[in-house]
Length: 131
View 1 (cartoon, one colour):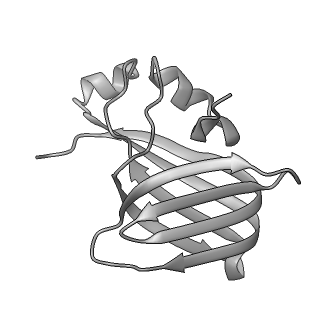
View 2: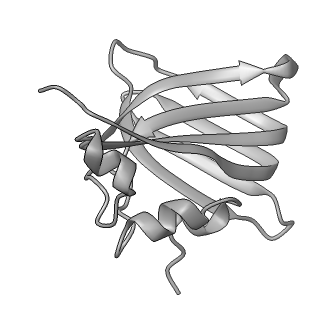
């Protein structure tokens, strides 16, 4: 059985409703990585690889063309961050280990590894990206 990244995060219902099939997070730009509460909370955000199949009416009215997602992890037990460059581009994988901890990994122009007790989608928003 293949486990998809968003299935291992709580509060994923809105994201699931936006897509017929939620895209994999491959070669995307991460807009930020935040470490809060002395490392107990780690958050990062990114734009989805493609726009929603079923966007809310408000997004259509505003002519939004990009879905932005923020993911947060709390009760972080281990954090590794290395190789930062100008652009944060990478692939995201999230799974649950045998002890029930959430394991998130970003690999690309930087490497981020998080092991935490809890992971959730903090926000999903639409915006109009100008090309």
